[in-house]
Length: 398
Image 1 (cartoon, rainbow, N blue to C red):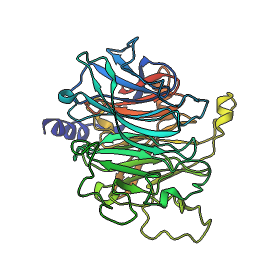
Image 2 (cartoon, one colour; image 1 turned 60 degrees about the vertical axis):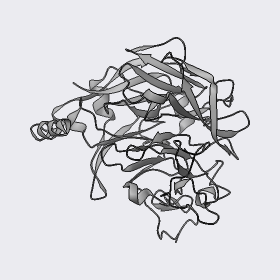
Image 3 (cartoon, rainbow, N blue to C red; image 1 turned 180 degrees about the horizontal axis):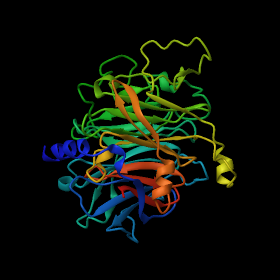
Image 4 (cartoon, one colour; image 1 turned 135 degrees about the horizontal axis):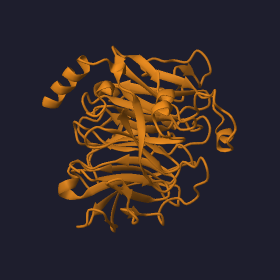
C-alpha cells in the first residue's frame, strides 16, 4: 500500500515526460536468448532462457559459466535463422522458494511440444536434470507456430500455457478455431493437484463435449509472449500475424476466459478466411495492430529496411516497477525484426498515449536491442528486454 501511495504522489507531482528513458545493457548471454525472468523472493539471480536448450543465470551482472539447466540433448536441434522450435518457455512456481519447482516448454526431437517440471538442487544455481516430470505432450504438425510461453497467473496461481496453431501457412487444419485440439490456444491448468495436473473447476469449457477442458482462450495464430498485469490481472497477448498485420489483444481476465481472438477468420481487425464479409460475432478484437511490412531476410543480410514497421510482434508487460514511475501502468512491447519498441496505456478499452520509443531509447542509451525476442520482469516489476543475439537490457530513467 505504501508503494502505491508513493507512486501516486510521485507521478502526480511530476510530468510523465520529465524523465529520459533508456535501456542499459546489464549482461551478455549466449546467442539465441529468448526470455528472462526471476523466481519469487529472489534478489540476486536472473534466469535467461536459450532456444538451444539451456537456462543461464545472471548473478550480480555476470553470466555464470555453467548453465542452470541444460537439456540441449532433448530439444529439437535444427535451429536455423527464423526457427521457432527449441526451448521456448520458462516459469517458476509461485512457491519456488519452498518447493524448488520450475516449468519449461520445449519442442523435442520428435516435433512434440513438451511441458515439464524440474526441481532445483540444494545449490540454488543448479538443477537436477533427471528430475524432469512431463505434464503434457502435444504433437506439432509443422515446425513453426509452436508458441511456448508459460506464466503463472498472479491472482489464481494457475499455470497458463501458450500454443500456436501448429504452423505452415494460413492454419490449414483450422486448429485455432477447433476446441478439440490444444493448438492455437492458451491453456490453464492446476499443477498443485492431480497427476500430472488437474483442470481448474472454473475453466470455461470444462464438461463440454468435444472441447478440451484445459483451454482458457483460443483463436490465436502464434501467441509470442503473453502477460498478466500484476495489478489488475488483465491478460495481454502479442499474436504474430500471417503476412499483413501484427496484433496486441488486451482484455480483463473475465473477458479473456473463453474468449475467441479470431484467427483464422480474422488477421487482427481484417478478414482473412473468408477474405471479406467475415462473421465477427462474439470475436474479441485486438486493441492495437500494425502492418507486417518488414522483409526479415533483408534485415538478416544487413539491407536497409529502416522505413519498415515490423514483421513479428513480441508481446511485453504493463510496467509496475518503482525505478521509472512515469511508466507506471504503461504497456511496453516491440517487434522482433525491426527492434522497434512502443508503449501505450489502456483507457476505457482504447489505447491512449501511444509512443514509438525507439528514437528516445537510441538517443539516451549506449546501444539498443536489435532482434527483440522477449521482454521480462523481475520481482520488483522492473522491465527487461532480451536481444536474440544475447544482450540483456534493463529499462532505466536518466
